[in-house]
Length: 342
Image 1 (cartoon, rainbow, N blue to C red):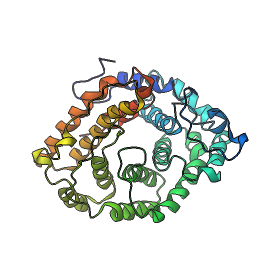
Image 2: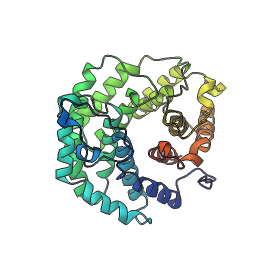
Image 3: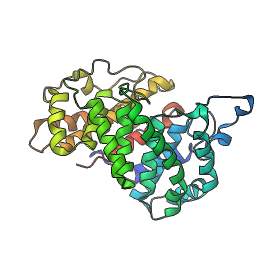
Image 4: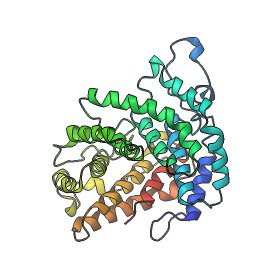
């Protein structure tokens, strides 16, 4: 889609419709499917749609969840856009008690204790928070039991998690805290919000002089440095975040660490792992733009961060569609980046 770029890098209704059509084309596409499923007995060998009647598409469970989030977000953002009726019809048949109950039952399996932890959990929280903002309450009511199951699992998990996970993939714990914070606010759960904040301080509060030396790796679709900063921006009070950020990335006004300012090079978009790097560019763009917004207008780092965000966004925005290895998930991160408001 070579005409995707807009001069001011904002989400337009036309672009939202294109992204929605992409997602509508794969959230109910069962195959190919990268099934993350542990078998305890022969009877457990079942098709994706049998195991996950809601989130069986989009190549894998977590991508399906965040594609539903994107559809929900775009519908609320542009309620009259062309795909709106199709999205509403899809939600009406998917977010229903019997299907959600089957998803909950899957999480009760002993072999599924760590299923999609923490990335898929985080996106389920984000989806639930988004559905709660819609007028059609049946959708959020339908999904609520699964959010409660995963919410309890996260509450149980965080006190046991002595160490964070700092990789640039699905296992990154800062990303999970960041998205879970939106859910805690949506459901007005101060105890959960406090647990998230306490965990973030315990894991990341003393971090300083981040070198970002391991970025990027060929598997990354997140920046371990920038998503940590975005996590702390979201969770810490403003008067605590800015001093922490000063310590964590003290040289960004000088363009250091340099690796955080260079978009990743993507050499083969048919390779699922290499295609992750388009996601890295888009998720970095989201983080840079969000961090820029948190800085005072007079702070020279603000322009540096805005420019870095734009550079990363324009590097990969034209490549949202084309091959299914990227097409089944990249638009979500493009929406996150485009919708940061200055």
